[in-house]
Length: 468
Ligand SMILES: [Zn+2]
Image (cartoon, rainbow, N blue to C red; front, side, top):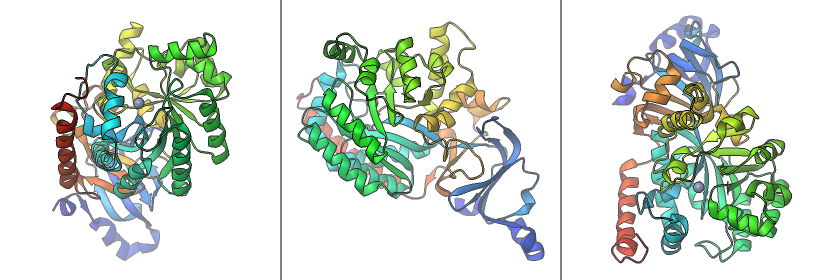
């Protein structure tokens, strides 16, 4: 039904084609009458703009005056809605959706609650079921690319392949026994097999994900660094996140900070993406810049856990690659970066005592082109420009909370909800149209997640085996 009303074959273009076929540029998808936020270098905005897509690439982004020059298989009339690059979530653990809202405020939660919970319940099934649900949540929240760290990442990869998203998927390496490896060496081998299997996938980049500096040995961190350079794959790690990490690393390294320690052992490279990066001083920031490390900034998770606020404004002043992330859905409780916008803007203002400290455009940059830079993917995604991959979202500006729009960046940061995302396109393919999922069965996915939640209740909540 919605297909007929919303994405109709462009009759105007078809009629024109019969008379002047040679003059028309044939494209697969045309989005017209849009407020286009290109996020290109000049941050160009087109008021009545268009975006044309051929195959999986953007072939034109214009002010819309040339709209009659195109003959499109599918046309979306945005009717003034905001069209922008798909959002990029630089840090998550997508499968943890099935644990969302458990023991939110337990002290020392990672060690007292999450690790014991995972020991009991992480399995191939859990990873698949959680990832399916998280993928739907992200597509419905406008996220087109995400960077994930978890176990059984080959199961996550299958779900990403099916739904049609783009992702960097990092197989976890940690020094104690986990569901898919008895020790860190086995974790590395699991990651190597996964890298071999997915290295040529068009939308999935396999990666290493050592959990954190303090949950791995120096030897393992160095081995992963060496292998990542040999295989030219990313390494994702929780970095400078917690007091416990500071203490363990200081003891191990004779008083060094986690970032200085990582630099010392040769583990800071352009392949590295550090999540959180809260406990850093000027020297650490200079090291991150020197080694061109990407940073995933997870505001809502960091303030919920009272861990602190990463000095992102300082990092940006130094030209460090910073993108927004949500962290896992047990930490930030959402996977949609739109839900981060408001908090990112306001908390940086508050901690800097400066209303102008974090303008809305900076936040949108960190969700799009900045996030692409953090993942070292800025050549292919993060902005709407000729030749880039067609990852595009349309934001409904008719929803009551979005009326009126004087400044689209302000509207997005201070007013928008994830539910205002109307269409999500990845690699030129429409994954969500008018909030309906086209590539997966959302109802079946929710049902499976609820069935798993029953198992969680029986296993850990009702038995009281894991501390609440
Ligand atoms: Zn995390």
